[in-house]
Structure formats: C-alpha cells, structure tokens
Length: 446
Image (cartoon, rainbow, N blue to C red; front, side, top):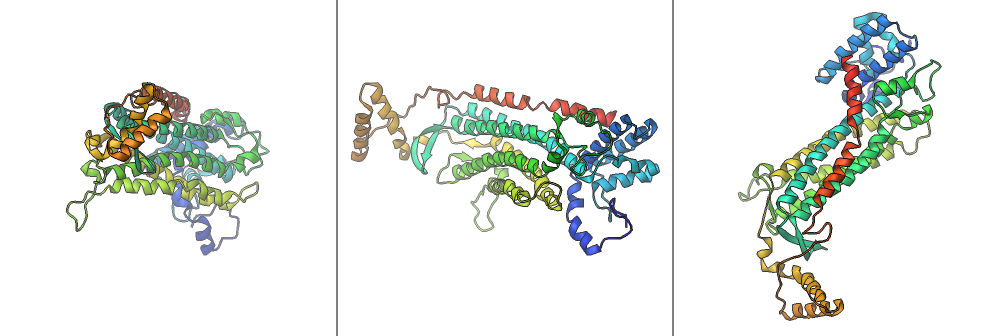
C-alpha cells in the first residue's frame, strides 16, 4: 500500500481511510490533466528561482507531458492505495526519475493544488458549455427566422390570450441564452484567477514568482491575498453553479413548453420520432421522454448552488475537509448539463411545427385585442373600444380579423433577431478563450 504524502510513521486506520478519501479518487480523474498542467507551470517557476536545476526541469517536464498525454486519452489511473491525483502524479514521477520527482511540491500545498486544478478544470468546461450554448442559440435563431410568419396562441394563466408566433417562441429562448451567457461570463472572470502560491492558505517563505505561473497558465490575474485564495474554495464553484443553473432553467422551461405543445390537446409541434418512446401497452403512444428527462435533470441542476452553499456556508476562513464533498456534486454537473444542451440542440433542429394552428375556431378570441386596437386607431377611445368588443364576445357577435400587424421592436413583425445575434457574439467574444488555449498549448508542447 502506497504511503500518503502527509504520512510519517503512523499508518491511518483503514476504515477511517476509506471514509475520509470517499469518492476523491474517482472525482480526481476529472482533474488529472489539469493537475499535470499546474505542476508544469509550478516547476518552471521553481527553476526560475533556483529551486530546480535546468536539467531537472527538462526531465520533469518531459515526464509530465507523458503523464498529461495519458490523462488526455483517459488512460490515467489512480492506483489502489494512492490517496488522490496529486499523490499519483508524484508517485509516477518518482518511479521514473527517482528523487527528482520529490522536488515538485516545494512551495505548494495540496490546498492550492486542488484550488488550481478546480479552476483549470472549470474554465475548460465553461468553454465547452459556451460553445454548446452557442450552437443551440444558432439553431433557435434559425428556426425563429424559418417560422417567423407562423402564428400560435399566446397564453396567460394557461388561458388563450393573444397571438404569438413561432418566430417569437424560438427567439425568446435564444435571447434567454444571451443573458445566461452574460452571467456565465461573470462567473468565468471569477474563475480565471490564479490561486497557486497561496499554499495552505498562508503563502510560503520561498520567493515564489506567482505572476510567472499566472502568465504560464493564461490566467487573467492572481487571487492576490493568499487567505482569500483559500476562501475562494467553494465560492468559485457556487458562483459557476449559479451560472449553470440559469442555463438549466432556460432548458427546463423550453422542455416544459415542448412537452405541452407536443401533446394531442395542443398539437402545435411534432417531435422527431427518434426522440420519443413508446408505451408497453398503448401502441399509439409517442412519449416526449427526452424532454421530460431534460426537464428533470435541469431542475436538479438548479439545486446545485444551494447544495454547495449548504456544504460551505458556515465555515470560517482556512481549509476544512468539508470542501472535498463539493467535488462530488460540482464536477459531474458539467457532464449532465452538456448532455442536456446537446439533446435539446438536436431536437430543436429537427422539430416540426404546425403551420395551421389558428385555423381552428376555438382560437378566434385571440384576436380580440387586435380588434380593440384597430378601433382605437380609427379614433375610438380605448375604454369604449374595449367595451364594444367585450359585448360582441358576450353576445356571440364577434368576428375576428385573423391578421396581425405588430411592428415595434421585438414583436411578431419585427423580431430583432440580428440585434440578439449581435449581443450573443459580443458576449462570447469577450470570454477571450484564445489566451488560455494558447498558454496551455505552450505548456503541453513546450
């Protein structure tokens, strides 16, 4: 059984070991290649301040690049008896390089290592989420334009209210994603700051060059105060989780609409057959299971910020083992949200709309407001026009004119999709992912 980095002569009880390690080894597989990246930047800095020789740095970097390649291919394994990813990387180095491998931890604690790993992991996964959200956005805008002249009922209180359109429906969810990306941008800026060098939360007596590791890893800036850097554990995850929860909320609402509109009582849309399932006893059924599961998964994701808050909100400053549990709810959440984004994008791309919904006479009263407004434009005071139309409806004399003429910004006849697209492009461009991608590429390839 491998010795832990912190063990001296006394071995920890096996049952205690199992309880305290928990799912850490499993969760740390998410962080493996980022732990290696952080070590590459750290030892490059150590060489610059005289704590490693040039030749030692050269062989360490070569071996770390080999380990990174294993992790990138999904072949990195945390061995039985090894506590975490940090221990595994150091063990692999010492097996290959001997005592040189033991030198990489100078000026670090596992506290700032995991802080760094989590930030590198999170900013990479934010980039994937932004790209996937952008693809869904493009599909929604395209469908908004394609079906902009197809009307459907708008509802308040689930009662027939006023005419809407598929242009508005698709476009509304596209614009919702713009605001979701604005919040994600703020979360990304908080994530993209370097905690390395804060060690156990109180800095180091070594003359560390923290700006150098910041630049090597492509961070925007440092978490300057070393105590605050440690206080950021849990805070960063909670803030990012709030941004993820907003995307999830948009998807959940869209999923509910789609389930409703797909039902026979509405019949507004038809989902692709390959995204529906059948019943074991009812041969006619085509159930919207994919959207229902999307709704449930996204509702669960909306509880993620609260889970993280409840784990860490009553902790004072400094490190506590409680923070380990955050990984178990935070790291896998990215996979779940990415799956939902991918499935919703596929379904929105292939969805079919009913182009003759309002031919049904039960929707005639949708046009009552249109008639009121028409009379107002002819000079009738609004309250009088409202009463006239109301009485005609009560008497069964109302005959609708099933045409709409909405021209103001954001209405049926003026969707402003180009402006919404411009907003999304501006938000996505402002992430500036190119900087971190270039920095990581330089570390990996030398």
